[in-house]
Length: 329
Ligand code: UFG
Image (cartoon, rainbow, N blue to C red; front, side, top):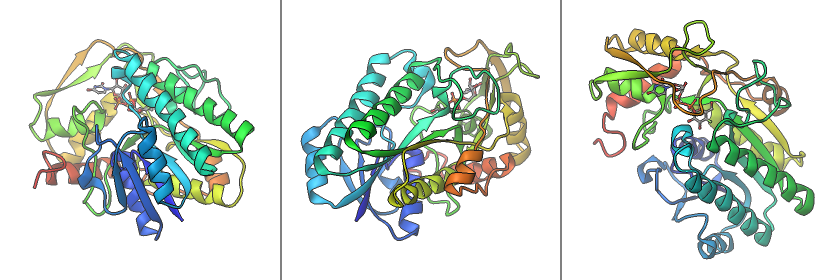
């Protein structure tokens, strides 16, 4: 039996594919390569296509014996989602509907879903628990929450079991040095700072210094991408063991401000660079920090690469070896 990974050529998807292959799983990937990279796939069978292409999905399910799906394929930029809501509802929500429909038709009843801390919006308290209020402050988070709710009903009515993994801020790169983070254009804090350290950017902009945090900049919970990948493998095992649907946070439980991340990058790389302060970015909550106790207890998840310096070091190794991302060599 194979595991279908949608969006498997993306950043978190490709690290998860690597983890699945390392454990001897058979992997099928569907990716429209809009933001994914063929080179990031260390194995598996690739279908180059879009989830909204129903004929292609039906063909994929008929050609492979899939017993579980890990669903990454989505647009995931908070800033962009506040400018292009149609794109987010179409690709994320409608794409998920097409996938669930194809799963139902093929009789596949397990799905691990790539969700996000952005489903919470501005938290009432930190660390955030899975039972806390979900009130997204941006379109991206709203679409992911809608996708979670769809899965809840598809479970209740059709018996499709899901595990929703709400990630906090993924960063870092694979230990092998073969795969890492390459978004085009890049909008994530850690790779942007590293590109600045590499001299590819003149400066790093801090989006807002007037938040109610100790240094005025936003606080996020950074988690190593391979620790996230591990959680997906555990979630598939959990569903295969017959577990009920569930939702888990995935983070380190410790927050760092934008200024602290910049300072850490300067320390790890030994490079000094220009930092400027810009206005706030629309839709950004001030603080997002996870409680991941539930994932540790129920899934047996044990993130082993949590330290911020280690996360940045692994990302730095990838970026300095691949200054143009995939296709550098
Ligand atoms: N930031 C800057 N300057 C930049 C880029 C980002 O100050 O040039 C700030 C942002 O305003 C934010 C923080 O750095 O406060 C992190 O921003 P990212 O864009 O790296 O990440 P987000 O927190 O916006 O979003 C990420 C993922 C989402 C996920 C979310 C969960 O992109 O998919 O983490 O916390 F939902």
